[in-house]
Length: 176
Ligand SMILES: Cc1cc2nc3c(=O)[nH]c(=O)nc-3n(C[C@H](O)[C@H](O)[C@H](O)COP(=O)(O)OP(=O)(O)OC[C@H]3O[C@@H](n4cnc5c(N)ncnc54)[C@H](O)[C@@H]3O)c2cc1C
Image (cartoon, rainbow, N blue to C red; front, side):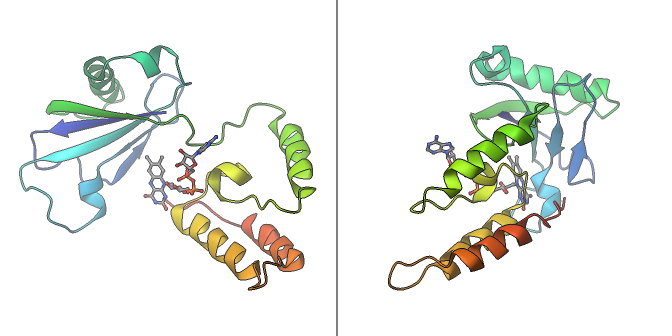
């Protein structure tokens, strides 16, 4: 995924914290305006938008220049009926692993890998990438806490408690 940050010369883009764009016609899957998530020392006359642009590492989106990505995002927002952002600069971050990608038949592949990793008694798998889940930050923090709780001071690992935690993790509901 490329995170495309549009630095905008305006107090606010919209009053919403996020816009979800799930349709296939736009390259942007979500647009966040962090200023609307928080009360903090943000500049009064400026806001920054974060556009999530899904892609594969090395494809044309991944390789595009920041300037081109900024223009693509701005045009896509307008095409979706959103206001034209008054962006004056673009910053990007390229992240090779962000969300699990659920291709058809992924479950069988995931089960095979989970069975193999379960057989490795020195290995504990958790977190967004490890369990292939699109969880929130508080979910993955509680996974880490549960893993630490299962670890004994003598280095032993309470498999029964961990197994119960893994079952509980399946009940996580993503909040946005
Ligand atoms: C744009 C965006 C906005 C978000 N907003 C929110 C929000 O508002 N609230 C919220 O609760 N959650 C939010 N999330 C989700 C939150 O970021 C994740 O739930 C959380 O970061 C998952 O933590 P994690 O440690 O499991 O995985 P990650 O944070 O993905 O960490 C995994 C780490 O492993 C590294 N890694 C991957 N593969 C390898 C490898 N082969 N070798 C070595 N290192 C590797 C990665 O580089 C990364 O540093 C957001 C996510 C994104 C992308």
